[in-house]
Length: 267
Ligand SMILES: NC(=O)c1ccc[n+]([C@@H]2O[C@H](COP(=O)([O-])OP(=O)(O)OC[C@H]3O[C@@H](n4cnc5c(N)ncnc54)[C@H](O)[C@@H]3O)[C@@H](O)[C@H]2O)c1
Image 1 (cartoon, rainbow, N blue to C red):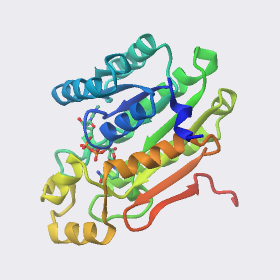
Image 2: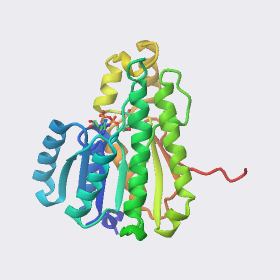
Image 3: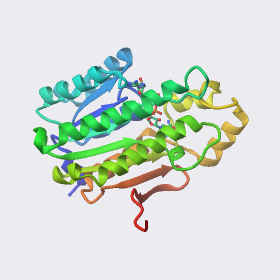
Image 4: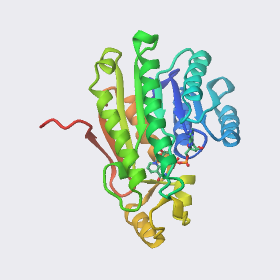
């Protein structure tokens, strides 16, 4: 049996789903006959993506909801709207994130990537939990390879991604996750061909420290660049294999997909 059958009729909420990897995730979920709410701060792109996906996968299966994940009110409203529209939530992909290392934007990087993702994680735990009317499910947090390996070009970004990995670790071993049968995993991609990546590759100096584009280009060449479709295959693998829980999935063009456990056993 095609493992994607597990996703038929499942309801997914994808943050940052208007473009880039989030949009790829939404499309992969819809192809597997899930229903998807794309939540994004960018209304123009969100509405366009919603319209495009509705045409391809059915009006009733996709909705866009405007949401800045740094706003507690807006973020909770998206969970409520998704539940009302689709009858529940089974999958939450905390994908929205930004890069930024300058004096002007580094704190915004922390607010969006760290606080926003933690907020999404807390809301997901609440809405998926059986005691609050949920039915269990799966949470996938999008971190990055830079959350595992030090990268001198983007310490703030890397730190937020390391934080996402650790927050996921803590919830994986929680009683709340066990009680409601909630699986949690982290996706750590290397470079993926998205608008964010293209800005970096084109020399956007706000995303790195020092603006050393030669170093950025050399790094990209060494690591290689995945397509959004390739990363979506990794997401669908996590979602459709019920044994996958508490794992980091590293994906990179040159090394492929590698799973490792989130917890360290020998301490
Ligand atoms: N592209 C890469 O090479 C790469 C590699 C590893 C990890 N990531 C991570 O993958 C995720 C997706 O990145 P991407 O490359 O697709 O970026 P992207 O910029 O192409 O897409 C990100 C989406 O998130 C939305 N967004 C930004 N801030 C938001 C906010 N405050 N609230 C709600 N939505 C918001 C944007 O509008 C956009 O639609 C991010 O968390 C990023 O850090 C990207």
